Length: 214
Length: 174
Image (cartoon, rainbow over all chains, first blue to last red):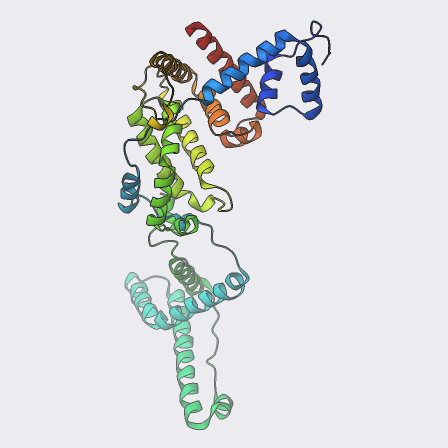
């Protein structure tokens, strides 16, 4: 910025930036030096200052209607999920190291509990459709394994109550583990996944993933 | 209050609405120039804010964030419906602000305000919003750029051109 008023006047943009407090300190100092000696620019700055003041002096309009009830009514009508549903869940140590494995084991437990019944239904379906005999055989193997597992657990509990846990463990037996492959393994995996998702409220419930992304 | 509202407590959010409704309504009114529309959009702004409350940092004041939500909503509304509404509702200023002596002076001031509001409403929506954010919400160029997802150079150019138009309109009125 030149100090001589007639040589180089600041642009309107620079004057506005000065009033907005957006000029860097060295530029501000230069501009103020110029303004101190240039009546033309001082007048321009005053006009701008007056415009700014007029805008900012516009009084607020009075609100005659209370908006609170309308907003709350819309929330209550269920048009909105509660605010908390959108909040990303914090991934704590507990969450990643304990809750997820527990959820997985619980899902697996549920599958094992209902597998014998489910496999009977699947087998009768396969037989009725006269298809997938190999898959049907694998279902039988898995059912035998799972049923055997439950029997082993029941036996372990009974023996430990009668003879103590150490003796019960000595006598404990495990059913033979079948080959988890093909359709039964797929069904098992899909069932665990589905239970896991349902358990996390991703497929069902208010504010679920699917509902939020509809 | 904010923390309670963030956990989905509608009553706590109601208290926030009550505290900030006048300023949010005024943002909408300055940008839209129509009372009914401003009330509707202010209500909509609160509803949107409720949905996005989890994104709000409770260490910051709620009012400025809420007013930015309202300004953005009005800008989208204006862009969608491209209303360039020069006419506006009769101004009903807050009575507490009208404390000037002398009927002539008061009349003059009322007319100037009316002209200024009309001039503001005649601006293109993007110009109107930057004026709102700079002069009424006291945001810096960088903050306006962030709020509107625009480059700072665009903010400057909108702001300077808007002021130029306003100055010319007011000069013509005088």
